[in-house]
Amino acid sequence: MALPPMQAGPIPFRRQHVWLAWELTKREWLARYRHALLGRLWALAIPVLMLGVYLLAFGPLVRGHWPGAYGWGDFALAVFIGLAVHGLFSECLMRAPTLVTTNPSYVTRIVFPLDLLPWPILVSASVQFALQMLVLLVVVAATRGLGWSILTVPLLPLPLLPFLLGLLWMLGALGVYVRDLRQLVAPASSVMLFLSSALVPLTAVPERWRWVFEINPLTPIIEQLRRVLLWGLWPQWWGLFTYLLLVSAFALAAHALFMRLRPGFADVL
Image (cartoon, rainbow, N blue to C red; front, side, top):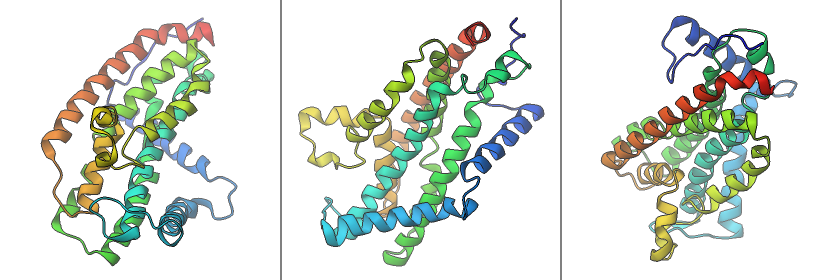
């Protein structure tokens, strides 16, 4: 028999919901590196290793070039930014279809605000992304110096978070009823990578197809991070604000869909 539904809302404000989200986030973060010899040190070691790989691969080996960049080092940094943003997106996307199905006890045995489930995944992935940006900031400071615009870097990924929350709510709810979704997320992640500016500068895309790359939700965040970190320019605030409004509307709609489908979860599971 289904238990009465309980919800925290799109943003948890009540103390018990914040506490629940915090405890679930700690468990998520600790489980990420459980039984590893270096433990949580891997959270910092992985970005350092990956940046080293990019500098080697796109430097002495390939000697890549990015429009407006000075040498292969900037090319590697430009790619690192793009892949870091995609990595944040991809981690949430991969977990989304099984958001509810991997926690059946929360559905059938206890009264739990299921709409809190995306928050631990999002926060854990965001912390890993923040560590990648920290490593990048250290490298940029050592090689290029930092201007005042660098202070805006923590704000630039924030508009992406409502989009990721909406994705987790929407696919998490649909994944209860359509189990085939988990087979589609890997190809979808690849599509989002190759149809964004993560690996390809927008200026290199034929103009007739450029709009496909520009409407990719990852592209605006990638471009603004590159604008600040690599070129030392200020963000384009109006574009980010418009983006935030659109993805916030998507997140609210996805949350409404989640709560609409929520009463049937127990019957399916």
